[in-house]
Image 1 (tube, helix red, strand yellow):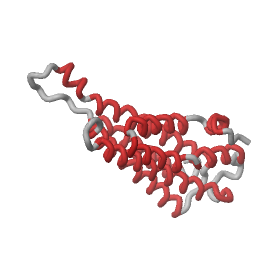
Image 2: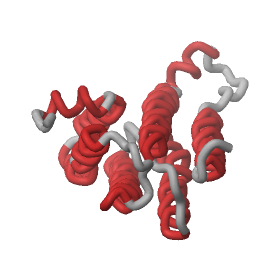
Image 3: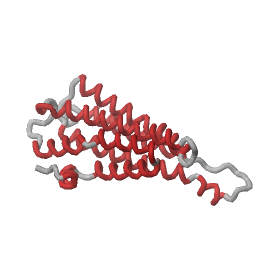
Image 4: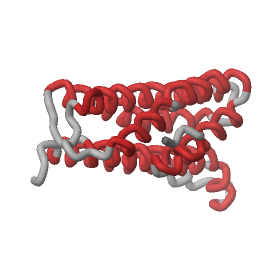
Amino acid sequence: MDKETARIEAFSDGVFAVAITLLVLEIKVPAISDTALATALVRQWTSYFAFVISFAFIGIMWMNHHRLFNHIRRSDDTLLVLNLLLLLGVTVVPFSNAVLASYLGTRDQRFAALLYNGTYFVIAILFNILWRYSASNHRLLAKDADKAAVDKLTKQYAFGPALYLACFVLAWISVPASLFLNTILAIFFALPPRIAAKVTGTHA
């Protein structure tokens, strides 16, 4: 292992991998019935939709976790706890995804969307806490960490909690609009920090 955080990263990668794999379990093989198989498969569109967006969201979270630990080179007990809290949020995603897939298009879809968006709101907060703890005064960063790159990450993540809170509030008004905004945010956080900085006009 070439750095102190290697075991943390390996464990985290495993959690992300399991969480992203569990998503597919929500897609069921239709029971044999008088309904044509093609029709039965089409009727499960909510499961496909929830699977695709959640797969993308967990993948993007993994990308950002990787970006963080490209700069973090040391660990302490607080970092371990904060990383575990973040992973706790990640493991909840398959559950909130299953709820969304089951209730999207029903009278309870609003509450399902609130749960779904609320999960990402909490994760966004945990991402910020983990990163800000590590980056504050370069507490756990590499000695040669690129200050400009660190600042770009900090600025990009700072938008997360407020924007995901907006998704949560928007779910009360329009579930489709809330999920659309959530998707746009996922794309934003998938962007390399230097590009995200240009998009938001916060580049140095």
